[in-house]
Length: 362
Image 1: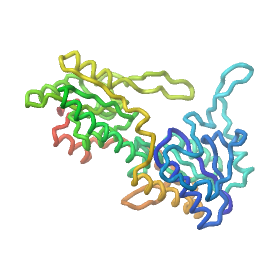
Image 2: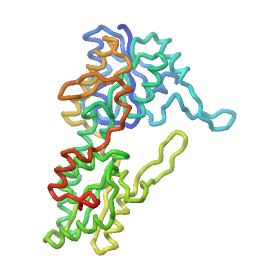
Image 3: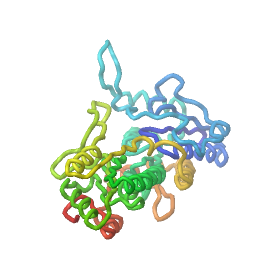
Image 4: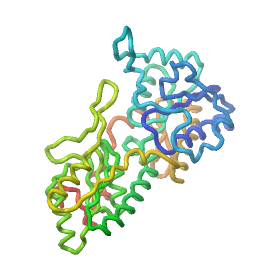
């Protein structure tokens, strides 16, 4: 193994720079290997200046930094790239151009850091002959094959701190405080933060809720002498028989942008006579310094990805299982989307604490 490349795709997450640093340092120190960084996801392979050399100096001091020094792109899918030709917008497949660029660089491995979408592209490139190793990244923790993705712990810590802060103002003003958190199809952030932050109601995509059940919990607390409530809501939560709430439509490249369910929940509770406020935490969950756990996990993932590349384990993804970093086939990791286990101990624990999910258990 003489030359490898590393790229980051999809949404940013705390710990990306820690992975890049670990890849570069392990490749150079352990394998005397040349490393290239690909800017702005897969697009960097086919855009001028998109491929840059990475040495030890390039990664000095980036361990605690959020974001990614390489940049990223939510729409960087080489199999469906938006271009303007003859004044018209169209979607084209440029994957062969990307593959040609990879081979022209004489790369022995491409380490792809990303979530479900980015890793699916990596799997498709692998099937077309690209030597790919995946690293699972997402604050939503919804990538299969691994117990946890880096970025999740930081988002969880930020969400829990927000609930702690809302708790004091809710109690002071006798209000219902609704906190809308990220989580398109998986409710891990809202569930874990809700339990850790003392939420009274947790609404997640996996459990359609009833507004009446949420209201019942608020009333129950008032009857028991608690004149305030905390509600943690995943952006992808939806009422029973209803649909998710979007604040921006999608297109051929972008999926629709979620947002607004927290406001709808707060407005309903307000209409029933309980003063309510909503806070949308948004991208604050993605930004800033990663926690010690995310730095530790991201560093282990980066180093393990280089070792997997050296061993020729292409088409695989590094993963955390039983406290050990192993490799699993990308196809296996992507086969079944990871969602909150409705029969698992986390849900059972929450219900035992009296937390409502807005369903018939409430």
